[in-house]
Length: 210
Image (cartoon, rainbow, N blue to C red; front, side, top):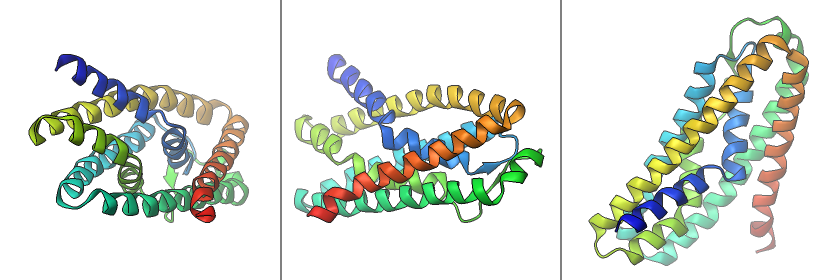
């Protein structure tokens, strides 16, 4: 039992640092203009993680209530939605960098693009799209539904704590760079935008082929 719970925690930690997760949260933080405070960056990561955690338990309820086939169909469409959202996020970041470049140097407060997808909603979509295999693993290998939910709780705890570490690292980076080296910040925002655009496109490739 202890070993399985430990594995659930490790799976959560591994799940948190998947490329599309980190790229999305960094992209949402990159939507900010001006000096990006550590609190702002951590809040972005926290909202995404909260949305992701809520969706995992929501997905578990859906999986228990409906058939596995329905879950696979939903996951297929949600992956496409995640890809589209990441492409949109990448475009918005590039647009902000090119259109509001002067504001990145002049602004002393952090502002967010009003048209940017919220961190919470992006976390929900990512959670529903990517947690299907994990839900199937826990629910099919647990002796009871309650024990499966214990594993899911530990899994989300792994996601939360790992994302907290990532948030602390990136919040320090964003704050120091936006405060001292605006040119480096602009370059990093451009890179973040391109990564989101490319990863979003790659997520859509299987759906286009199928």
